[in-house]
Image 1 (cartoon, each protein chain N blue to C red):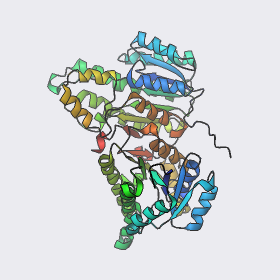
Image 2 (cartoon, each protein chain N blue to C red):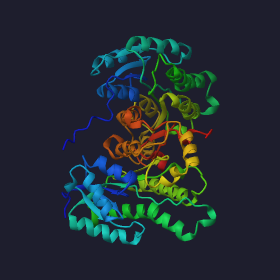
Image 3 (cartoon, rainbow over the protein chains, first blue to last red):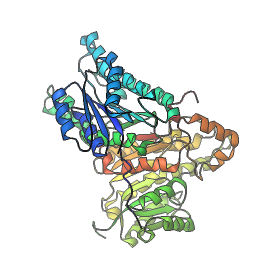
Length: 256
Length: 251
């Protein structure tokens, strides 16, 4: 009996846009998608890391687009360039995100506006393009990387939590708008994952604080690949009846 | 028996509907134990699997919760196998208005849907019975655990209890065993056939699902993902697979 199945996660021929692709979760997602056969358009503001990654990725062709996503007004042009480069999009994974740990009283409007711009407004500006026929021909997929901070509180994370919770609301309503063309919109809410963002947070912790944060996760800290696998599952045909959902990947953080 | 005994995937409710679909799909890559009430239907499901001779059938009515530990333990010992993964798919659904919900019917729903799940995991984490081989558990819950619907009091309460059980087990059994739920929306299966037989209800159901009514295969992929190493950092979670139904407040 033939027991060789095609890989259900296969992304061959798909054009996927990944933001925050130079590091952390975005980078792991770009690497996995390329390995699954996708052509990947990489977006990040860190040009050197982006170019190095594009050269290391298998399959292809892939493309690099250096863009600071805080420039929300420029995103329509960015998407137009991306489609001009590698053709219509199948999927978007918005993994770019920034965070400033500050008590609310010390949070300046320009700080929270930048967090909201990159984490949330850029997500909307990117994803709404998927409603356009020349950008996505239907049957596409959008994944926003949110956070457990969208579902549980943490002192010092008010702006970040606000920006990430908004992604959940955005995803639910956009899921309904895009369902008629078969395009799905979902979120992944990670716990603390070993990324450059976590490394920056860790600089302010002593060993016991670090241990205490890791102990909040029954399975310990996660790896960027753990989130990339979930993104592939949602984007590939395996996620075909999943839309408007939040997939929590947090090593048990929220179950406690 | 020793730790080298073959590792199996135990699927409850394997004789029909979603459970049978899972058995057929997973039979290529796993050695299965198909669990259900009806020997003939279980054997028919086994014969429909890839390499039928590789798989086992455990006939047990899960409403008999008290009998699970003894009978499953004896079965595993007799077959010299152990269980590495568990999918609890068996469920009882009686769509009944409140006035007809006699305590016995509620208890029957809870026995199969919740108490059996707890007793299966308890049994499979006993060293004497399963040699600490259990690694991953998926409960098939329902979006009815999150939302209300007429006639769904007992079923919805049982699935909400199942999800709460899932979270507690995930924390208690980490990092050795991962425990998660999938929450499907309405699928066309034998369990829901009566709902789709009612043309008015069927029409409303279809209209409420942005991506249409689901097929069992849509949920099987999600279960496969949660059982696999790709989900090695996912535990204690409810994965909604419902074609957008629970996002749709205009339904």
